[in-house]
Length: 206
Image 1 (cartoon, rainbow, N blue to C red):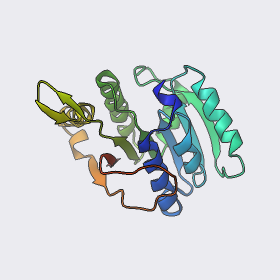
Image 2 (cartoon, one colour; image 1 turned 90 degrees about the horizontal axis):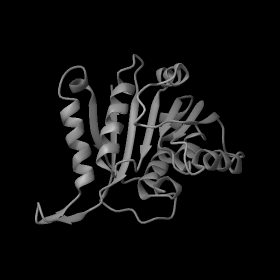
Image 3 (cartoon, helix red, strand yellow; image 1 turned 90 degrees about the vertical axis):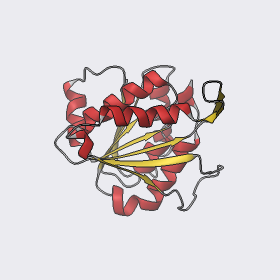
Image 4 (cartoon, rainbow, N blue to C red; image 1 turned 180 degrees about the vertical axis):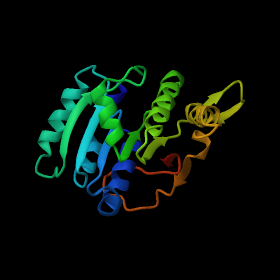
């Protein structure tokens, strides 16, 4: 299962949080989508006021996130909880709606690798950003290149489809007025992994 291993987008996002935690994440309510093993959630909990980690309730992934929080309890400063969240389920409970409405920062790493999932992810982002409270979303991912006969070239189709979905869905107000910019990843590396130019970090604000 994709969520049961660490991908480089999660490492970059975790590094970004460590680099900017005191100024950006202190006393914030943070929500992570597709938390995987929970690395970025745990790092964010070093600074945040509240941390909510979410993923699909399959393959014991939620239990794994909870265990990893407990293993790092000596570093965790925020309150935290782990709960299910499936991008394909847009019928949100009152509890989830309340959590989203109170959220200041949303994190997502390595969730763009399947077109149908990408569509559901963009729909989820749209719904989150449509709430009244100002929110900042950080999306980290790695462009995965393949050679396609259609293009007769090496391309990153999943990444391009993510941008296409954003352009298509957010082409009218108020979505067209939301801010989206690519951030430099030229910050300190705290974890051991290979960082390259194919890893991108987006900041989105409503």
